[in-house]
Amino acid sequence: MLEYRVEIALWAISGIIPFFMLNIWTNNNLNEAINISNLMLSRYFLCAFLVRQFSVVWVVFSFEEDSLMGKVSPYLIQPINPFFRYFAQHIAEQITRFPFAFIIVFLFFIFNPEIIWIPNFGVLLLATISTFLSFLIQFLIQSIVACLCFWTEKASSVERLLFIPTLFLSGLLAPVVSFPEYVKSWIYLTPFPYLIDFPANLLSGNSTNITRGFFMQILWILLLLPVFKKIWSLGTKKYTAMGS
Amino acid sequence: MEKNIIYVKNLSKSFDVSSKEPGLKGTIKHFFKRKTTSLKVIKNISFEIKEGEIVGFLGANGAGKTTILKMLCGLIYPTEGSISVSGYLPYRRKENFLKNITLIMGQKQQLLWDLPPIESFYLNASIYDLDKLEAKKRINKLSEMLEIDDDLFKPVRKLSLGQRMKSELLAALIHKPNILFLDEPTLGLDINAQRNLRNFLQKYNKETNATICLTSHYMKDITSLCKRVICVHNGSISYDGKLDLLLKKLSPVKEILIICRSESDAIKLEKSGFMVKNKRKNEITLKVENKSITSSLKAILNNFDIEDLYINEPPIDEIIGKILIKKDCSI
Image 1 (cartoon, chains in turn green, orange):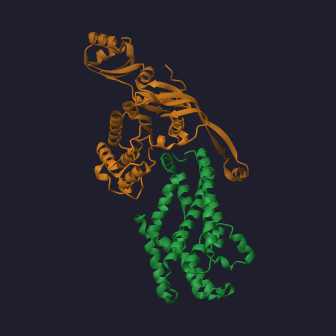
Image 2 (image 1 turned 120 degrees about the vertical axis):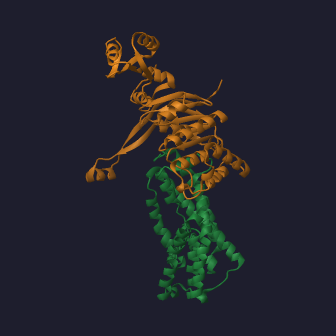
Image 3 (image 1 turned 90 degrees about the vertical axis):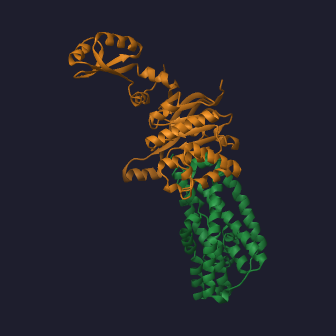
């Protein structure tokens, strides 16, 4: 991934939606409605940025392109599931993103010194684990959608449908706590709040239910894994080795 | 005697193909009600291949050669019939089976585009559970055989097509497969690169006794590598046997170019009862049946004043061209 340093730097910068949202929230004093201080909200959106940087997934687009170009064929006859390749690519890129993401955090701290805080080791460890679990959930969801390429050829359109709930319910635009009580109870049953909201709250020191968060993350992984395995096995039976 | 390693019996493959009428009306109709038809591209074929054999699959575009290779290597599921490669059902893609085979498709690459080939080789070595030392040994040996030592450290995108193809081959052979499926491996290569690749495949087959199934539109690939060919026509096998027998059958005559000392000798020869293809001044080209070539030559040399003569085989491409459009080439 080091071959694409500039591309990765641009990707890291392009993930600054949480900073825009922070601006909207603080300039309109919206934080008062949900009883969170400006300081904690700023930390939340900074952490949302970091979690997003290290959990973003694009496997559906890579697989779709490889599938349409006939590149999946050589991978399929190797004694390893091709999704391990994509998984390794994602991990490699996450490692490469580290310096760029931290430069952005550093700049954020320079302009907002009152926000600086250093989470303790335990929090850092739990947040890292929950970010990785969030990445796993997203990777599995997208891999399942990617497998639809065996039937539809354009699985990325299905992913775009999923992008909308991910955007609104994950905590990227607003902390989930800002939703009405009855909506929240439903949202917490979906995988979305555990993608950004839970790890970001954990890292920023905002209040969150740690046990429920990890339980739901692991539960969703355990539910999605067999679905992926099944759809993969059905899909490869349908494979026509298009484009080769 | 070599044992059979590939068994194919009554194998068929069908694909669902959707069709659409042109224009806006057709597009709207296609959106609401798709018309799909099942197309049988492989029809009830059977054959066996021995260990160490090099077999060429011949056929026109769309005849089904590549589909057969894809089923043999387990890339696609057969619709009907049975298939066994090295004792495995290929479509189950068991680890031990996959470690035994390789598939190379001309122009389709598995090398990482922006990295030097050596990185892809080591990645493949890890995928196939080779330790670093063994991988290094194999890379050195294969790169020596393929003569690509200098190109291993340049990014793939900077390599020529020939160098890339050789690197593809190395990446595909690093795990020492026993069975090679090669789909037009010399596609787009220049004459020298084609020859080098053929020499390499011959050497690899000789050294490892690997079985090679090959498709190619370059007849030189087929004639220099394959003793046996399987001709595929419209999804069925129209011939399965020795290449030289097929060539003899489809080309029963040879052409003899005779240069006479004078034009009058050429005119006399023209009227002597031989089948004449063409005549120009003192040069005359005759068509003579293979079985009577010796007696005909004897008669010509005894009765006419000949300055020089050449015996020409008809161009192999022409003969193979005939095979591609024939439904049945049985001898």
